[in-house]
Image 1 (cartoon, rainbow, N blue to C red):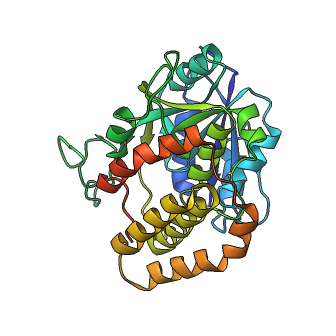
Image 2 (cartoon, rainbow, N blue to C red; image 1 turned 60 degrees about the vertical axis):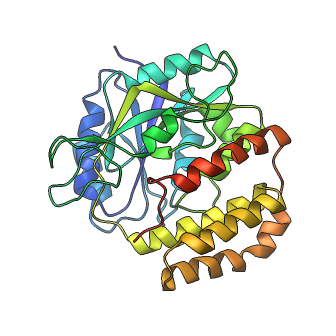
Length: 314
């Protein structure tokens, strides 16, 4: 079942044990995909361990923390038509990479295929709100999957699944040429909700995004993360994307909704301050989306507000 159509790209920082587990899972896949690891300046011996344990993995060490932009670096070097992203705490199920590549082969205007996400909790972790679990340690479906499956967006007849307005990088296979042409992930956004801007730009270029129920990625959320910094960047990046690409009325609505619903603390205040500090850049780069793409985003506003999976916490 060897399949050389896809390169798996993993970004990591200071989570060596989790990364090695992920690489073991990827090495066991029947597709035998090429794997590229971008080590974002880890200080825990990650690069040394990868070289010793997985000599066939392409290891990139840029020497600084590039965040999501590390994926851009890997994409420049990839010689496969498709890229599969995953994080150092997630791994693809056997057959899913080939299944995604088959969909991309069959539909030339399809840019991304997002898989169903199964969450494997740590023994001391509580399930996400809205998640159904048979037992404390059993994997459960990520709450965001329901939103992907039930997307309200209209879609062309040829699209093999629900049309999406964005994607989750760690659960998605992308067309390499489309990713490169759209510019990849924005260096300004760095990490945290960075997919939304790229997804909108792909749609503006005429590409479609879909969800595929028969594909699966597994995720064991790492406890080693700075939840407050993640929230700060997520709020900032949401605001930046909104004012970069949405018309003024929509941008005002979303900004007001965020201001009313995020936790009222120093982290949220700093996020809004960060967003305001980037206003000169936003105004220079502002490029509202085509009407058809904006219409799709309007249709997603109500489901996003009612979502139990889209929460700024930490």
